[in-house]
Length: 105
Figure 1: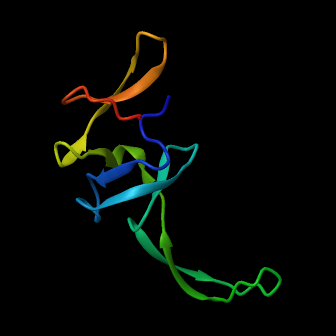
Figure 2: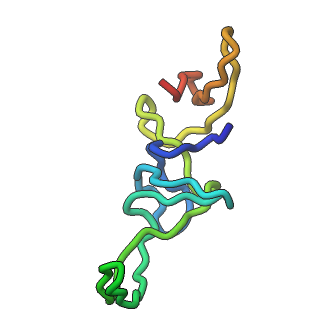
């Protein structure tokens, strides 16, 4: 079970975007995440008339490593470490390490 999933609200802990919050759009297999409006880069794209893509300089999100983000804990108002525990019914859930509150609803 992954500690960070698509749709999680995360806060960046390292790098030039340190302190910024965003929602995870995609989790890649290599341990990197695409987060809304975090790690923005300018990419030069060629036009492709067959796909309807106009060329130019496009600003888009670049991947950020999972070690550089923490799941945002709304009760604390800051990033928090996440653990995994098994409930009495055998279901695995993620929980915040600081207060034990379950992340998964």
